[in-house]
Image (cartoon, rainbow, N blue to C red; front, side):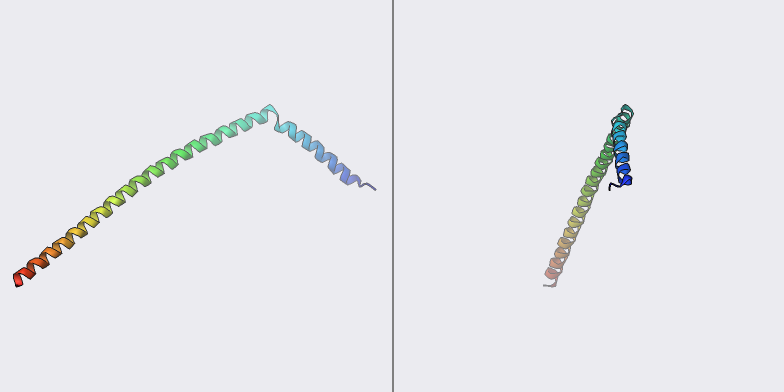
Length: 95
């Protein structure tokens, strides 16, 4: 025997499915989809602007860090040369 409850559920599902397709394809739904897509595009543009700003700042930070390291290396090299010159001078004075 066929279960009437299962047939009723199938019929209700088909009815709601058909109504759902009509609802999803209505002009009001299209307006909602369009507005949602426009909002997503605006959000994407805003996000990309923020990402570009962060990338620019990261580039500036990297350049500053390299300059600091180069200055430290030059200072350390000057100190080594100065120490070597003092050592040479003291060796010559001792002789």
